Length: 339
Ligand SMILES: *Cc1c(COP(=O)(O)O)cnc(C)c1O
Image (cartoon, rainbow, N blue to C red; front, side):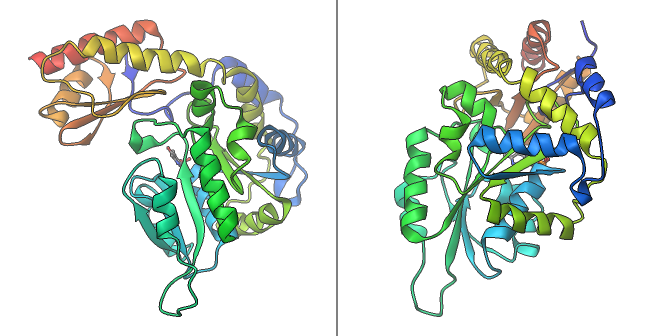
């Protein structure tokens, strides 16, 4: 049994021995010159995986979202997104400071197509900023790992096309959605102009995200990546980890989803604990009377989680958590709530 069970995030995973071996063996070159063969392979494979013309390897999901915004809008435009979106909530205001965009917020985690239609502005009246981008998040982090129904993504894609505006999907955890819904990555990506996903979350890599779209959009994103300081040199060591994850770490996401359901069932019996959100993927949010105190007590027993509000705790399952760790966590939370 490991000493610490870390459920703070699926970003905490460390590369496995197999992944490290793939990284050590990677063929590399200078990717700013377009000469890293492993990065080129990864970009081609991701473009194909998502059914897009081109893809770009970037250091983080935050940068992928930023490049998607910069390459598909003009400063002063408006992007429509959820109030709970990572892009709005957790990216240090980059969409405003660097993207120069206004945000039009929708109150639900999963965007309702009618609400989006109502929020779009394309009028000729010079008073109002034009809407040029819709942003969705699949799965939805602050929505409890909620999954977009394919039909909703298709409806939003249709709205974007009818209005001549773009649709970006922040798919940091796209493969969690793919596994949970049985929808293929191509199906999920088809209605979207650009799609990003993270290698450094559930897929277990140390670093890296991908942004995919049309060749024209990715050429623009490539320029913005350079501008943002995201041009990397022998990045093939990181791309090799990503290729390894695509081969070995997608199917196992189902285990994370099962554990999220199991811990939820086990903890439902604890008085004072309630579950405000569904847990369709790898996250469990639970409400308790005093979250910081309970997080501290669980940490004293070697189980780490985040208090995301004074009364809400988030636990995330990932590659470095097994069934034994899950059982430890259940016991630690039970004791922490009861004492
Ligand atoms: C983690 C995350 C990102 C970006 O993550 P980085 O830490 O910048 O790689 C973007 N969107 C969502 C939904 C995320 O959970």
